[in-house]
Amino acid sequence: MKLSHCLTLLAALLPFTHAAPTVSSARRDAASDDYSACNSRFLVYALSLEQLVFAFYNSSLSLLSADDFRAAGHPDYVRRGYEQIRKTYQDHSDYLINEISNLGDPDAAGHCDYAFPVTTTEDFINLSEAMQALAVSTFAGALEHSHSDIYTTAFGEMLGLEARYATWISTAVKKQDLADMSFESPLKLNDTWTIAGGYVTSCPPGTVPDDIFPHGLNDWPILTVPDTVRPGDTISISFPDTLYNTDDTLFAGFMTGRNMESYPLVGNADGSFSVTVP
Image (cartoon, rainbow, N blue to C red; front, side, top):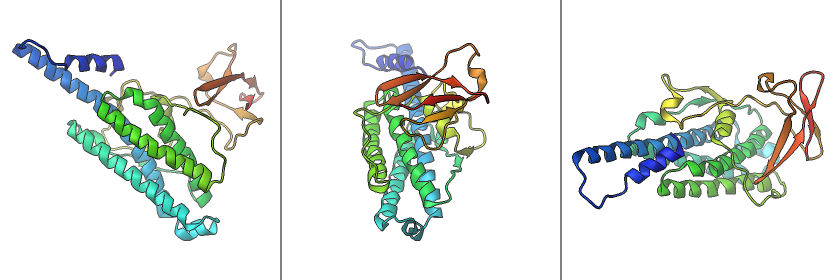
């Protein structure tokens, strides 16, 4: 449901100064139902992200013992910190499931199964940095889709914690400098939908995304890039050739905070493209 439609529904719920006949009451009830549906779809979307990240931490910490962390050179506080992060995502998921049930959609709160490319402690830590960046950027971009002040506040509280965890991983765990940016880089709903979908192995039978998620979600085509990208590197990227015509001039966009820098792609003989990272 579009935001404009949900806002119209909200206006329909405002009180009237004159007594309304039965038909108007019915219309308000219908509007209330649709307004709840707007919120429910947004909450289900947020729940799917929280469940994904919880599953990542839960499966990885079940695989990797405290001794594995020590053997990789990490002090005990690192694994304890990750255990706290796991608990936070479980709490967030529980909150969202409860709210979705209160809105009358308990069947929409099921969870999918996931698989993650983690076999070592370093695999886990590197992917945890990416997962936290995904969570933070998703909530930064998704807040505009909230149709309730209560939920906007709740998601702001979640976002604050997830940003703290992202910083902890990149600095205390990975010993990196703070990111040189003043604003977060927001993701669109389809961006996160596409990234998260790469880890999903199965969902409950009968799950129809259009019935429970925000309308208009689509999987973006997969962009293949190197595992490690550094400023100044010339990298090769590839994506399905159905997205463009051979005569098109193509660009790669690099986003930092609210800033986007675009650079032309150079075609390679194998059908991929090259670009120099700013």
